[in-house]
Image (tube, rainbow, N blue to C red):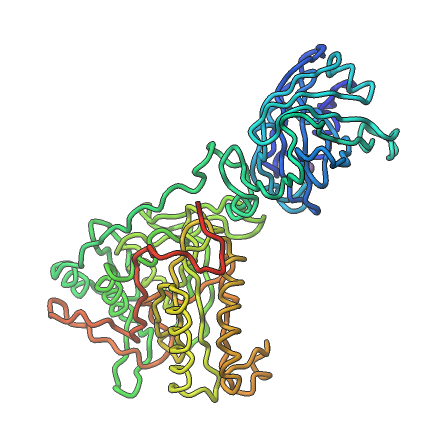
Length: 524
Ligand code: MN
């Protein structure tokens, strides 16, 4: 539908793709009135360049100015304000992330809001005259402001581009030297732009508490002797019931791990049994996160492949998560292993490695673990790797940060660090990089920072790059695809609960009550 030629929101709508951005398209605008007072809002908008958007409700729309340095209570300051297109009234509540590629891409918070009153005539007239005198009553801004047009239109066409000046009169609300950047939080949600950005693309829903508190970690029952006996009684394929959920199992006698030096091969049935037995210990690291799989349908000695999407024929009880900001063509629906039967299902897919995301589904751009990956080079000895691990322990102890080491099942050691809610990946990544570089500098003979494997001269690498969205390390309790996996759980009903395969150990599943890493900002 073509906009009415006199529709004040025509420009606003023409610039935006409402099937992509979560910004409001706006209701039809009522006939203009002579506005004397109304609502105002100031957005802090990190687009290509940081700016503040001052918006006044005049004649049924939000008349808008982009203020690069932001409004201030400082009466000595004169701030450039560029008149931009009118926005719909609904925009006053908008807070969120505008996708890259869309107009104004970046993050937006409601930095201030309140009401204004036009001091000299109506705001309608003042706007036309290029001279608005306003008394603002907001949460951050107060007192008498003047908006005065200083130029004609500086750009061809449209309603935009005329330059104005915004200044605060010297009244009882004036504060010399007042800087809007000293007051960074949203008056709507209490969040900073960083925190809104960490939530990902879309509009913030509620008036705050956007992430929701972390739920307590559930507990899961052990597989019963009867359940394990039923697994062994199955033929090559069949339906197995575990924890009340039914899972279809196939090719149960297929060898997934060829025999190693001990001559024992591990079948898919063994793998299913292993996961059923360790499920209560492994699920705390998996239950609320997407999990990426490395599948080896032809066994550990044949090539595998990554799998991030849920199969069409997955069981109906399988937990999934739809990523809200998935790009076209990318995986939208992810697996979440939240119960023992889900692990049996993944074993049946020959998923030999499980890689949980470091961020939970409730805040998939905010990690709850920071990861340090001590990646040995061909020349790195186990003793040298222990030197690196102990140096990290000393450093983390010194910083007062709780952390747990985990062997990888191959040659490496990872350090998992629970972090408080509200950190972005850029926070954890930068912090881990600082810690690892400081430690690496003390043992330059052991560590290389070269990117390419062949450039590292066989030395170890301290890899902080896993602290990023959708980057993962292998889960605690996950097998690794290598021949000779040891499996001591093949007889049902025995007392053995020794983990099968290569034990990978596990960091603490508890959420840390310690402060987040000091190099990162704290959370309200
Ligand atoms: Mn803007």
